[in-house]
Amino acid sequence: MTYRPLVPWQVLERKTLVSKHWLTLYEDRVRLANGHEIDEFHVVEGPSWAGVLSVTDDDRVVLVRQYRHGIASETLELPAGVLEPGELPLEAARRELREETGFTPRTLEPIATLATEPSRHTVRAHFFCAKGCRLTESRDPDASEDIEVVLVPRIELGKMVDSGQIVHAVHVAAILLAERRGLLAGP
Image 1 (cartoon, rainbow, N blue to C red):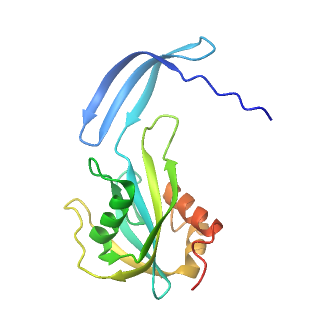
Image 2 (cartoon, helix red, strand yellow):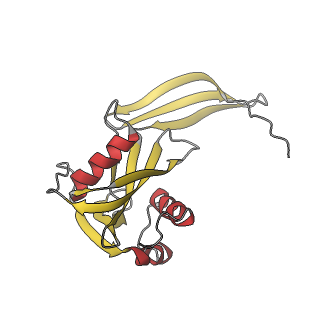
Image 3 (cartoon, rainbow, N blue to C red):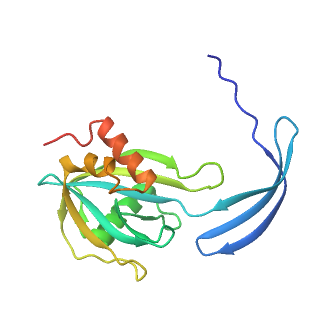
């Protein structure tokens, strides 16, 4: 199979429809490589973030349970949060793990950087696998975060994905990639 690079769309005009703290919504008029024009293509710009698949010394995974207003339901997720300006993804992962859970990892290695919804969103999610996690300090969540720390046996994590207990799609992808790469192999 021969690879042929695709030509990026040409932005002919861009209007900002909404500009808030963590959200900018653009309306672009674009021209595709074949000459076709789309008058209203919407692009959502937001901050990139980091998430951590954390395994404790006693072979449990550190998850957080929290309410997610977009789906009007609580979710079980990996600890995660937005990168601060100038912050590297690895630094953000370590910080978010500590703030949300109080755990500190012995090692931290990359799993993947994923586009959360590449058709219309600019956001990237950076995932890391933390091993040897220990509770070292008290949690320090943001005022907007009502988070419960949940520890589950590592061996149960795949079953939780399969049963729909973990529904955040990019978190599921990070878990499955970590499993596939052997990062969640037993002690």
